[in-house]
Image (cartoon, rainbow, N blue to C red; front, top):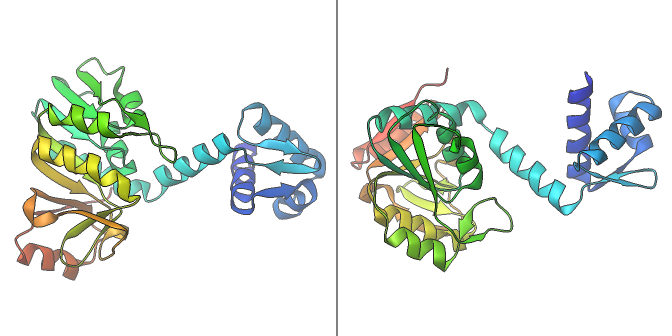
Length: 256
């Protein structure tokens, strides 16, 4: 295990346990206590964890950043495939809305090199990805930053979306059940998602196969009332066919 891999593993261990001692980390990683202390010192200097007497813990900011990075990297290949399919579908459009999901962040990364496009988004990471693209104008909706996620929410966000219009909206989902109902968690995010859906001519839900056939706290819409679903080829074929039989347009993106 090289240095960077070892330090990533240290952060995972500390994140999952809340805190770890030098002895514990040394035993888990099979390296000396001196090596662990060097790693902890470097990670602390980068703000990735907090040194304690004899070990380390994650501070609130470091925990947030680590948790978000874990979400971004979860099913990364699938999200990239979905993003690629979405960009191909919307090729030539001039206005697009993206919510704050990690799947739409993957989509934003596929927009590099696109020209003549305005992207309206609630996502700070998506805006950061696109801010230096010469052919793309980025419009942040305004609003409060959600405590548990780097995206914008609240009444200001919703009212700003009401006066905007886009050709496409791509929205993530935390779950989609067998009847095509689309769910989000936490529930208070549903109002922003609905505002985006109302402001776009075509609405596509972008969700990898792990979200299908499930429910969570708040339903915010039905696939049958929108343009469709973009998912990946890991999705259950019978589930996809059932949605298609109900008239839902489902795009299954191949994973490269």
